[in-house]
Length: 366
Image (cartoon, rainbow, N blue to C red):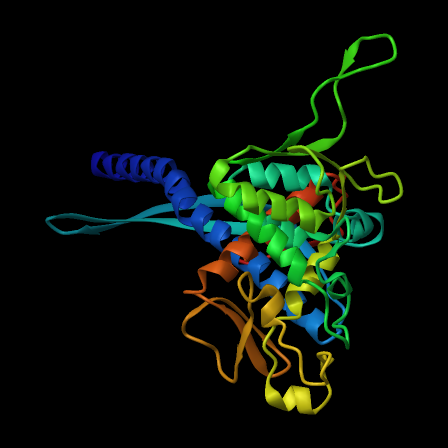
């Protein structure tokens, strides 16, 4: 009996130690896996919706709203004793069962939430936040803005693939100059300074301003920038507004795209298999001379989706759609940067709305 008590004590001790170590070990194992799985599936969802838009198929967004897991540990201990001549034999046994039950909740974007997050224009404040956080002003403005004063940035590309080529050349020249100024630390996008009201009291301005610092070597480029914007006599501080009918003198009227407009804009440069083009599954955009327009001219330096007959080995993210594989090449750093910007914009838009209760909850069997 003394031996039996010793065995049970040892088994209980092992079970207790096991319970203490399983929790931390499970966290180290499951947390990276869930993080990777959610990140990967969201990337695939973005790419899938981009490709859907290229084919004029309906996009659909399904958010992972929560992931919870329940863990349990069960221990079993037993012992058998055989009495034999010359002594007895003790045969102890102990077991431990670990069980994990994850529950994943999904929230489809629809109704008012879809309207606010997907169809509402990106606020100018979001453009400010992104440029101040280190993003290239050329990338942010090219993607988020479809018009500044009289400069058109392929505004007809904010919807289904157009049949006629877009206007974009002067806008591209303009954002190229902005990038030059940014690299020279001669450009700042920020809030307007305080203004004096009728009583002489100072109040904070609600507008955003684009400030250009005078740099002798960049004077010709700054002059060209103002010419393109249609404000040749403006100073070095330009006020921004989204009101085209009440634009400040020497100011900039800016119209931003919605998230859906951005997705459409980027989807046009998705590479489509020749068989799909010949079958008329996608719209063919024509140049002024009647030849096929190359969308790589518009977003080629920013974003490009490739296609392949089989699953590519060098893909950063890939999806299987309509019997073909669409992907971003892992060494296409420009496209990967734009894809990252796209997800940040999506999250910024999500921060503007109130989260709704999940509509679909799935318990995943262990």
